[in-house]
Image (cartoon, rainbow, N blue to C red; front, side, top):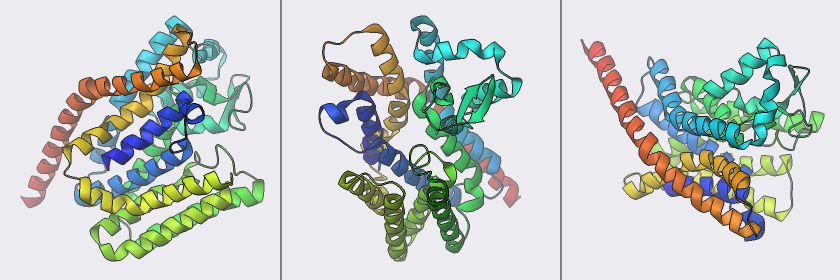
Length: 357
């Protein structure tokens, strides 16, 4: 499944670089993100049901934070430092921080450090030193413009899911299905009642996206019990219909949502076939660094180089982002992952010893 994860991250980079319009489209960015949600739901269901006990909540949350934070912090620090030197767009917007309310500062700094709340930048604006609800990216004061790592908003949704996952993915299937139905109701209710069916409501609002995460939970149960496949197909078909109702952009939208539904159905088989393929696993490990670092590459190239043709710029972004993701994986992710794995094994072994004694 690592190849799929890499394809999704590469598709986001490819689209942000502009190659989707200059050459040919790959997986649309919103679809790629939503497939990632389902994959996350699958993996969290897997580890929580097979690795962590009911008393290991703190260990699970700290491990998820340690999995995401080092690469995020590295890229954030480099982006901030270079931003001050090269005048990246977000830097000027932080210049007025002294005039902001303390609540605003606590939220902005806290969200950048913990990653919790990064998704809320899509729903707020900063005016008069305070935060207010506002349409996404439609005003000059949109909070989203203050993000050093624009694509990191998805980490806010991921962290929110991690916090609730131990209380959800171990529940009966009926409970998971009820939550999926509630998530559908939120999505369609926002559309029918208030006309909220575009970005950010279509794939950035956690209550609406919870169905995607929990579809991954159903995929886990299908992985463990093939008799669950009809249910997984049914849930995927429901996602296909609901997402098309929620946001329609012609036949290309049908194709992208069909890919999403097919990917969810394929998750159990993909994992079963590829889980022992080392090259596939390592390719998948590059996806997180690639997803986060390509914004930094875009900032640097746009600040330092004037390309003669848009295609050269786009190709440079993709190539350099892939190279930087490899460097981050080798220098940051591998060493910290070894430490994290050892820490987890020791803690879990200690807990089992206490239980047995």
